[in-house]
Image (cartoon, rainbow, N blue to C red; front, top):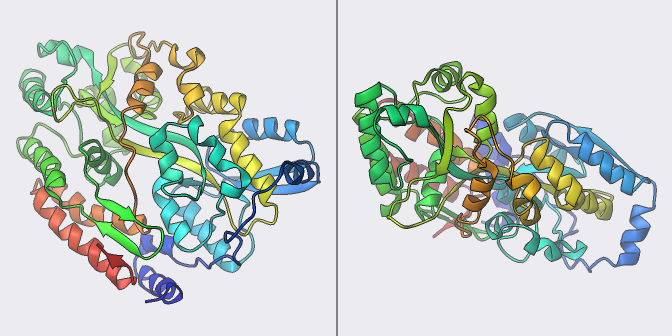
Length: 450
């Protein structure tokens, strides 16, 4: 199936599933990404001193503060910031605007896992000719790989979610556990001790939270997805390594040592605040979130790396994070690129994102800045949590990719894996069903599956 036919098939099939609309409605650009010559400094100077209006779609609260810094540096550029929603509403409106050929922003926030679906339909501007390659060393390697898995650079990293373990030191101590479990075997043993001694679950596995499970896969070295940016995908969610992770969680769930409440819901919030859960395996955005959710437990929490599959290892996965991309349809490409770059690469702007909006940074300069890493948190007993996660960020596997239809991946996870988790069934066996669904879907869209 050729590329045009595949786009049509994608639109027809995804229209039949509610979340699948993220894949519809993308039309190719007019060739703006092809054979683009490198812009010169004269081009940049001209663009940035020409009265220009840009539109920036983002869900980051108060990012107007960083945009103001940009406008102060480039007074001829006027940026309109719009929040059209977060998650599905954002992508629905973005794709609808792209399809309509009008109303789309110049710069848009995109989570890493959705970049390939925009690359598929030529909706993003390759930022390499604008100098983006020169920024690669400014970011942790694995985050840069998310926006530039091959030669093109599709976006500028904005924030990331390297994973760690937040735990109630007081609850573990009352069970005789004086430090965070170092391995997953230790964690399983601690789960039983904590439950028997205190009645608390050592943590919760959200029944419908694909991002968390994929993060666990990432840490375990599983490569569930791959995409060549063109016609070929690889799906391997039921590998032996993936089933090892799934079996681990199945056993803890079936022994009633891990709860399976839907996370980010009232019962889950109450569980964090009440001590129902003695911990939360989460990402670097979790510490601030938890602090606001369970304020009454100030001083009782601590942070640690994820348990390891092998004693002595030091690896993690990632859960969440986003980037800023320039649409190929922008009429002011140079100015749009300079905005995306400035927001996430200017020293003051990047530090503000990390310390005012509390987005965990992928920028090496911020991860090494004492103003960020030396902050002590009273909620975590005076621990330097930023420093811990800065170290963890250096341990995330660089080689991790996504499929160009991650919306379908997530929706089928909820229907397939999520149901099994809720029913305390065999997660490893459910991975076979999920594998078949993802492969069949890819073939229906005209992809070659390796």
